[in-house]
Amino acid sequence: MPSAFEKAILSNLLEPKMKSELELLNLFDSYLLGELTAEEKVAFENYRSRYPEVEKQLSEHKRFVKGMEEYADRRKLNAELEAAHRNVDVAALKSQLQPESTRVISLFARYKIITAVAAAVALVTVFGTLFSTGYFSKTITNNYSALRRDINNIRRSQNALIKGINDLPAKTPVNPGEFGGTGFALSANGYIITNYHVVKDADSVYVQNSEGESFKVKQVYVNPAYDIAILQITDSVFKTLSALPYTFKKSGSDLGEDVYTIGFPRDDQVVNRGYVSSLTGYAGDTVAYQVDIAVNPGNSGGPLIDSKGNIIGIINAKQMQTEGAAFAIKSNYILESIGDIPQDSLDFKFTLNKKNSLSKLTRTDQIKKLKDYIFMVKVY
Amino acid sequence: MGYKNPFSVLIVNKERNNSVQTDSEVILGILNDSKLTLNQLYSSYFPMVLQLVLKNNGNEDDAKDIFQESVIVLYNKVKSGKFELNSKLKTFLYAVCHRLWLKHLHQKRRNVPSEFVDMEGLESVDEDIAEHEEKDARFKQMDLALNQLGEPCKTLIEDYYMQQRSMQEISEKFGYTNADNAKSQKYKCLQRLKKLFFQTY
Image 1 (tube, rainbow over the protein chains, first blue to last red):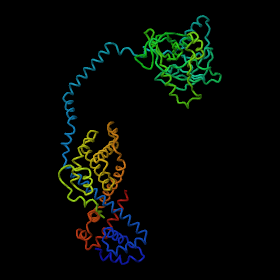
Image 2 (image 1 turned 135 degrees about the vertical axis):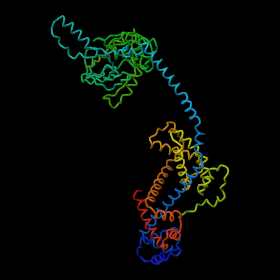
Image 3 (image 1 turned 180 degrees about the horizontal axis):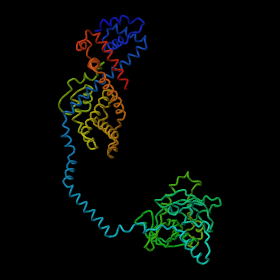
Image 4 (image 1 turned 90 degrees about the vertical axis):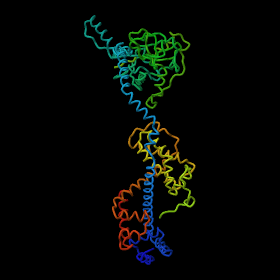
């Protein structure tokens, strides 16, 4: 029932003046509750349409009232949920759901001490055995020697010799290099591969071909995990090589396969031959082959070539105190490394040779063709 | 105010206190604000959620919160007419709880068991949860505003706008001399409530 107060407002509804906020609110509430009579409703709707401001206020009020109703509904639902929750025996449900885990915990609690004692005994036994058999006294690394050549050592001994003969102050040779290794061409336009350990920590790196010409190179890619480094000749005097005669073998090699390598353990190329003696490297390393071949410091980074003239690996190390156990990184890791080089970091496009022109030649002819592609790597 | 839902006519006396309700019965029960339905929902699906939460670094209180929230999501969806009967109630609740619990774990920076995250193939309930979160924020806002409002305004507003009591009743309860007095009081209270609500919203 609208009060006298509201009736007074309603009688003024048709007059074109704004109502006070209190009057409006009461009108809105009555209107929304449907308490207005039919004629009051018509008058109110007239009034609404006349003042857009009032229309806006009404819709805001409506929204707020709806918000309050939603709040009330939610609170009611929350209360009902709480009531429903009280009907549920959570503890019983819980124990019913997790019988296994509680059993495991109690078992563990019971056998905790026995387990601890057993573990302690096992530890003592394992380490005691290892210690008594001398496992800890030898380190793995001193068994394994990377084959880079310490040129300084040789130089010093030579110098001493010369000094003894001439009794003159020795002149330091121009750029003898501190370390040396071997590298070979990956492509005709001056990419060369060698071992990472050869060029590691280098200030500058040069390569020298079989004619004795030196070229400056830069490292474009290293992969310490595979002990692979890829260099690029940046010297302007370098002329592009003729097409590579060899290819890289994608598949693995067989045990007993005849192989040879060309390297620079001295200042001249040296050829050594042998055979693949194991398909895994040092301590079962699957990245490398074990090769029964005589190699020396300076052979690191040299190609391991099979009788058909395919590169099957890179010589990188040999085992000390063991005869005929050298190691070579498998060629598929070379290919993998080449694939890893970000192509946009390269100055020239890198294309691998796919045609092998060595396969029908005898070994001596193969070596003649190969010698231009094998470089001595000099590290300063 | 206070809309009548069109289903209530159909389901008078539909409430029985035996046997498990089918999904469509539950939906009708929700629309009709049936307490029986709520209890049924609780006893049918709470164990499932309890197991889910307990298995994944939670305790029974977490399970209660998550389950109740999922029921609220369900109610919102059903009452807004968006729940389609072709999605199974159980799957829906499970998906909502899974999502809510994952969110909770992330917020608390607790370990999320890896197999828990991988439970793909659940229907996407992200939209429902987003809607729920919005509503939840408004609920908390209103709750805060009402509590800041203080008495007698709080009760007055609740009586009038939420319990739908008449102004006559209210002025008698609060001892106002007449309904007009009560109305001007209501006006002042509502203005203050709006101010509090929008201040922090």
